[in-house]
Image (cartoon, rainbow, N blue to C red; front, side):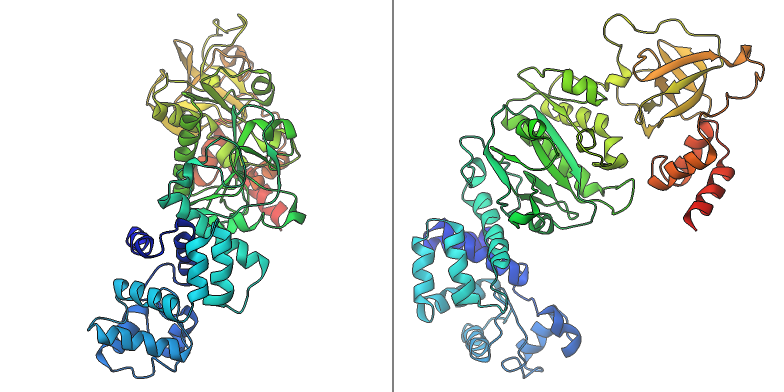
Length: 501
């Protein structure tokens, strides 16, 4: 449908800016659905899109011209325009909701009643130029504010990039650096620092803290007073919005140094901790990271596990690293849900790029010769000091993840094999040899309480507060992790209930 419309109007208008602007307006009006009955009239008239169209076609509904309900691609509403549309469809012996017929009718309108608008569409030097004229002289909605102009032009920019090949060209002056061809729409923000002063070597995903659409994310940054922006946004429906050209430094991470080097991506998420993201958002994030790396000549995306290690690391020419907003400001962004998946994200992106497999540093030997090789007699205790140590099904790298992470806390190891430790809970195996992530403690067998784990380091109330923040996961996973760390699940849940009152 989109491509059909693009081809139809390009053959007649001949200017990609004007055609993209028209598509942006019709998308805003109807979602490019030629049978769209104005939503607010569905209940009032007792029709759906399909039943309304059918009733008009067969003559059982006779008030199409005067019911004041918007209809079709352009949401034609005024009685004379609806009368002309109906006569045009009947003259061709087709449905009022026929796609090609509405293309032809729309073009005829432009040629006869809106010649000045068509002239601008044919001569415009930008999507915004054509879009503003279409808004004020052709569509003429009640709200013609600057915000609406920006939003409508943003839709048009998305179609321009998709069909005119503009995905390879920055549109707000960003030099030679390209933007992603995965962009579905564009809502440009004035909030940026212009061309970057440092080379791209980082990707910084963020959580929006709201299940916003792509356009909704873009709309958050259109006001100059907001003093914030991002390069891309991923809406809850899995669509991508361009907000600031990749060649520009966005205002996103509370750090000039990071934003100069990072492509920043705002992702739709839940409003409460751990700020989970749905599969459409997460999968598009993977695809977008792959695209960013590939266009910038990178073969690997790395997750080094901590702020200190990452900021001290100088990425090689074919590498990018993941960074986090929480490192530069007192925020939880990108939320524990995504932060705990940084290692998985890096692995999936690197695999898609065809680079060498890069495991999470938490599962690789430590640097500097401090790798742990000697372990106490089992069972013994370990203190995991990072929130996202991966649990594997078997004591080996490769595709054998359980999809679970330990979280910080004390855990009992009942078997050791090739540097891997088997968790007493039966959840799987964790890598033990890197002391930056896992501190080996004394043997439980030699302790006075040989059959019991060592006492947890935090109080029940402290753990309950962490549970409320989402740090321990949900449901069965939360219970498993709490018990594996030596906490009484019932006591913790009771404390959570008290604190929530």
